[in-house]
Amino acid sequence: MVLAQPQNKHVLKAFDLTGKVAVVTGGARGIGLEVSKGLAEAGADVAIIYNTSATASSTASEIASANKITCRAYKANVSDKAEISSTLAQIRSDFGGKLDIVVVNSGIASAVPAEEYTPEQWRQIMDVNLDGAFYTAQAAGKIFKKQGYGNVIFTASVSAQLVNVPQKQAAYNASKAGVVQLAKCLSVEWVDFCRVNCISPGFIATEILDHHPTDWRNKWYDMIPAKRMAQTYELKGAYVFAASDASSYMTGADIVIDGGYTLP
Image (tube, rainbow, N blue to C red):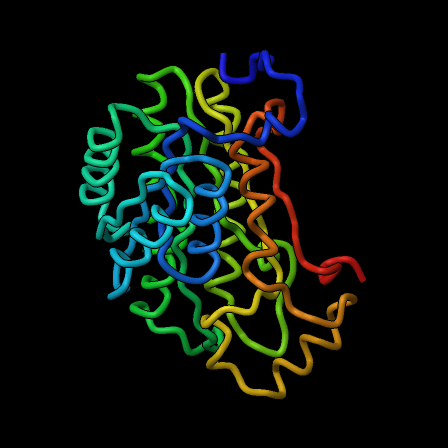
């Protein structure tokens, strides 16, 4: 059973991912890149899945060299069920016939007034953030069920819990709320062979926020008790924790990392 007690009781050794094979979707930039680095730093071999990054292969080579592990990049569209499924199967084959950890991280955002969303704009968000998340987890779950073990970690968002202002992003918020509930459902359905958890970041200094107006960013700073955004590397520890034996009895959890943003 996947929630069986691990034999290792030493706390630092429990975080060690040596010998594990990890996949990170959207792993070539932003949060996903730091997650890829963090898992590699903990000893895991890492497969980065990307869709548009022109530097994914060189990024994978740099991670491999820096950490003395295997890291490779694979191009795939997570919203294409057949494509992401075949990509995970290929990764499993390339990395010695197993997968241990799949981080479902790919995501996109938009700011559109709810009354103005076109079907195409709505569908684009859901295709990647919710449908793509499910297709990736589903493909991983099938592999994990055959293996008898595995670990899925979703990147959700504090937007699953509150309504962000001043930006108007009903589609994004709804998609991330769906991800959190999806993770909870899968954690129960798959409890015999797979742990499933979420990480929900608050405002993180990534390129996804760069296009927003300065006055929006100033308002966010005022609303965050920590009075700053997090750097992407500040999330690495949470993902390693969720991926490792240090969280061996945790499934269905949603870890919020937001500088206190959701609390007032």
